[in-house]
Length: 117
Length: 117
Ligand SMILES: [Ca+2]
Ligand SMILES: [Ca+2]
Image 1 (cartoon, rainbow over the protein chains, first blue to last red):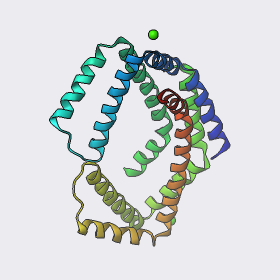
Image 2: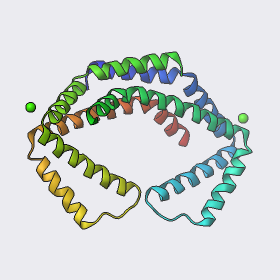
Image 3: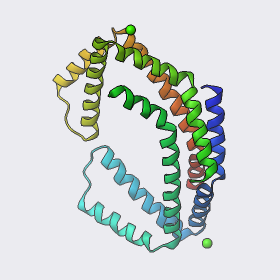
Image 4: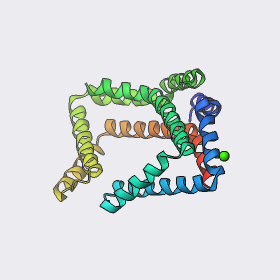
């Protein structure tokens, strides 16, 4: 990898580490994992999400029962302010990463859109 | 978005634009699109690839005939040095972007792997 690209990518990594978005996310995570009940609820929620995602991606059928189970856990999770704050922080961090990716991918998108016309 | 993150992402965009990988890719693209026959062959190849990818992602069946058609076009494309050079340049550009993404995603991966344990 070109030194200039690598150096700038490393600088960006540092800026992300120092960003409010990243540090808030870290704090909210620590808060969720600090309390046994909240941690278990969150891990349960995350596992169900990952299972459903995997089934979707591999084209496996999702039963009515699984959908209901997932909806139940989402409803419980939405009552938990510590987890809600974590999910909001995750959303802000995702937006930051999406904006970064959009900028970094701009040269390629530009090139493809020019050549394809 | 935090100004520091945005500024550094913009600096990274600039470095990518100035990289040998990006400029070689641009050159190889221009070369393919310069010659009518090469351009048509390349567009044909790309369209078949995109169609197969879309079918895979949406879970549609791919017929034996489509597989053979794709293999035929790949074989023809591999005989075309201008397109082969473009594909090699695309591969180098993909590697660069993959390395950049790996660095940029390191803070998040670190956080998740710490919290999950
Ligand atoms: Ca607490
Ligand atoms: Ca030529």
